[in-house]
Image (tube, rainbow, N blue to C red):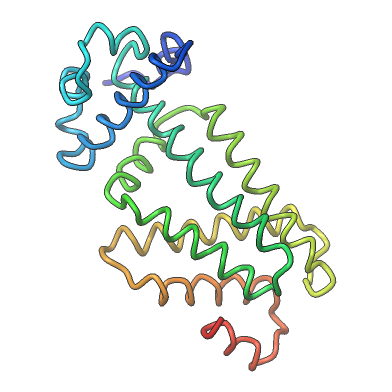
Length: 219
């Protein structure tokens, strides 16, 4: 029986201290991502990653003591990227009407999550078996803050005064719908956007007029 992964087991051995070491770590992480995409977890090991990255195994071990630490760093990298991308879009959508702003945020999430669909699917599985990572927690908090700020601009038209909970619910629902759709295979991004936005509007604005609901598909 395998032991559960502990926080210490997935900690990087050291952080890059200058541009050259930062480039090495970036190359290692990208090589890890490509191996997961091409061959999955069964083919994933530090020797394969080092070879593809063009570094020695010893160099890889300077930063990552084992493949679990490498996977955790990759999960953190991808989570930080998608959360930062969506949070930035949410910030720019604060001046838009509710439906239009939701569509812009959802479209950004779909585009980012489907850019490397196979990698995202594998890392979702990996993340479920890891302890909470500080990087993903910080990124998630930034995303929730941006979505909360967007919803706060529309507080007068929402049925709840608990904006923080509404933002958290929207993020969870959108992620579940997007992940579920992409796991089943290729998607039509526009159709998926429509489904997610309609679902969120049904939660956020259940008393919206029929014409407003129809407008979602044309925004």
